[in-house]
Length: 160
Image 1: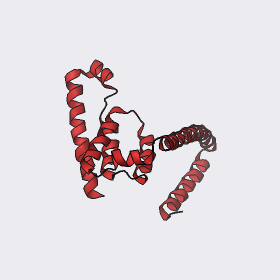
Image 2 (image 1 turned 180 degrees about the vertical axis):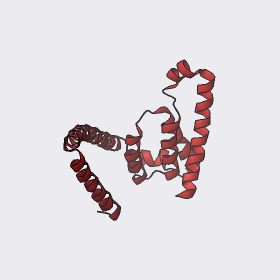
Image 3 (image 1 turned 45 degrees about the vertical axis):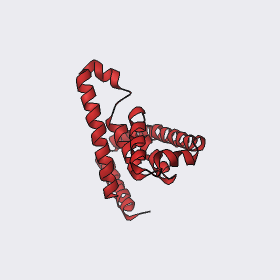
Image 4 (image 1 turned 120 degrees about the vertical axis):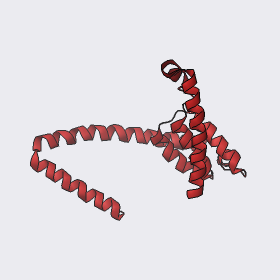
């Protein structure tokens, strides 16, 4: 256990004891609500990990290396950006998936492009955006988001 985790655990225990002293009923009610939310989250996370494992089992590692970790970092970055643009995956799923992809040989810049376009560009949600924001706004927002996502990915490549 790291020192940061230990400090966070101690602070949490102190806050829980303080809350219990101030209002026992409210604290117990909060703990029961937290228990339900925790159990819901755990099942989702286990499902996500199972899907990531299935994905990595089905897609051969050499395909991942070729597409997102090929000899051309530029091309791999574009592929990562395109994949992130057309997929709808919650960010909390994308992060563990991305870690697995990096371990499988993907370029960090390509994975950065994947994550940034995944969260910034809404190709699959364009029809809804057209309806509420108009075609021009939606297209401009998505094009600019794609460009800035690539810039962010390149920046991440420089930093990391």
